[in-house]
Structure formats: structure tokens, C-alpha cells
Length: 115
Length: 115
Image (tube, rainbow over all chains, first blue to last red; front, side, top):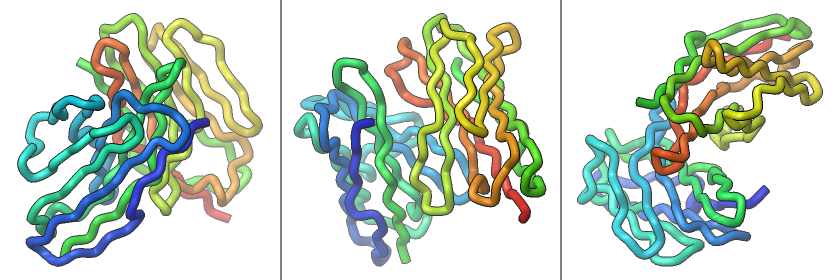
């Protein structure tokens, strides 16, 4: 199957700083990328959907000014957690869809810890 | 509305026992896909199976088998002769074409296989 990478895989930051997470589709063009958040022992919850070249669509309750999503190319989407706080500590997973079969593939996730 | 229910939060079995993980879904869409993913402690989602709504054939892959029944909206997953390496959280998920291809995840079932 196709490969989706995320960078970094793990990040620890101080409260108040901003963190950028990258999601790349390595061998296909991802017309749509999704960002999910998973708190410990919970399920994955969709945060936002982004289509290349257009603004992201955020799920209810997700602050678009806090979680900035950029999908500037068909292989890269970034999620920036602005002014991170301890409650933003979570596992962030992206998925990318595209290609002839419109498959969707998940990245390996980024574990964010805000001190 | 789309919804996936995994009623079993945690299951423990002794090695070599068979175990079935239940999944019940809700959707009004006629075209949809059902998935099972394994999430080991590392967090990365491991794809196990995808089934589309028009294919009710059961599937077997090694020790894994899946039973899809549209009449009861269920897509259960059985592991035969469980092994310690099967210990993980398992997620059932639904993806509908009419809702932007996002995934709706169940709450997951944490499986512990005791040696």
C-alpha cells in the first residue's frame, strides 16, 4: 500500500509554544488529507479535513485559529498547534486519500506532549 | 448519522483461545466501507481489512476472520488461537462516500492475550 509519513514522530514542548506537524504522502498525490486526534485510551476523533489548495473544514468544537492546517501541495499537509497547552497533549494522526482507487492511508502518528 | 459501536472495552484471553471482537455500525448510506485496524502500543494504525457494503462474503486471512452481516449491521472480527503478539487495541471503522470519505471510528477494544 501507499505510504504516509509524519514528522516529527514525537515532540515535547513548553506551554505557549507552537508546534508544526507534517504529513506527507510519499508515493501518491493526496487530494484530501484528514487530521485526527486521539487522547489516551480513547478513539480517534476527526479534527479537520483539508483539500489541496483550499481552506480546511473543521469539525465542531475544534478551534481553527488554534489548529492551523495548510495543504499547499498534493503531497504535504501541515498542522500547527499554536500556543500549545498541556490539554493539547495527544496523539495526532493524519490520513491521506487520493489516487485512482481513492484509497486512504494513515500516517504513523505524532505524539505531542506539552509541559 | 454515522456511528460505530464496539461494546467490548477490554477483553482478556489466555493464549491459544479464540476471541471475537464485536462491531456494530449505523449509516443510512447504501455505499460504505468497513475497516478493522490494529493499534499496538507504538500507536501506528495497522490496516487489517476493508470490506465494501456490497460484499457480504466472510473473509479469512490466516488466524483472522471477519463476519459481515448487513441484516444486523455487524462486522465482527475473530482471532483464532490467539497469541501474545495479538495484544493491542482494535478499532472498527466506517467510511461513507456521502460524508466526505472521513472515517468514523468505534471506541476500540483493548485485547490482552495472557501467556
